[in-house]
Image (cartoon, rainbow, N blue to C red; front, side):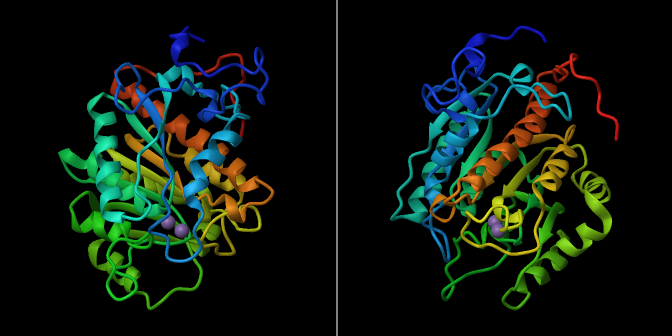
Length: 337
Ligand code: MN
Ligand code: MN
């Protein structure tokens, strides 16, 4: 593989064992949110769950993801992607939030994410609850509405909770469409299921042109068929990728606030994200890991592993934006399917 600036490479477990040292995200170098220059792709945590409508805990998500992510290695054996050699990556720590004030937190996260963008860094956010995707979209969609692919048990398209509260983790994408941050005609949501209120989220999706792929349709068509359609919906223009860990079946990933049975297997989740390689991804996230409901730690581990897949496809898009091809590990033979 091509040599890259070692200042942006993870600590290798061939040199320092995984259980030792500072548990930065995937053992990447730690950088400060105020000085992003030099990096091209930056993880940052948003330890906030004040917009959760039921079971809180996702404020502890970024730290649990960092700890679990120390088990991640350098190369994706299925796709041969070498993301740390493809884009200069760093861990930008956690955004400052105010757990007692949702409005202030939205402003803080947007400003910190805008600082990353201004420094030329593509953000990958670790939640936190799903409302925290909204300020990231506000920071990224300055040049026009983005395409959007969501893996989630829920649409998060509701209008309000508790008598008209507009900002909860069940409403971010309704707000994002209203604010012109997302182009509804280029939005696709995969894995939707479970009990619901009255279907008003689905009615909004139908009216505005958002494509909903319920889990039953995913089961019938499989990851390849569904993602071929998703790629068509996204097209070649800039798009955002969001993965709510509750998209995974709760028998596998119980550590989340709003579990719904009948979800993705971990392998299906990998297949779904891998199918986005080549899409024009300008930002991504993994949200809703809630360690208090994750006594075995498996949810954080699954989350960290999916984050690696998200990193791979985001790094490809980042390299292409810089006019480079993604780096592939030639030593691994191409997979046959
Ligand atoms: Mn959800
Ligand atoms: Mn969600």
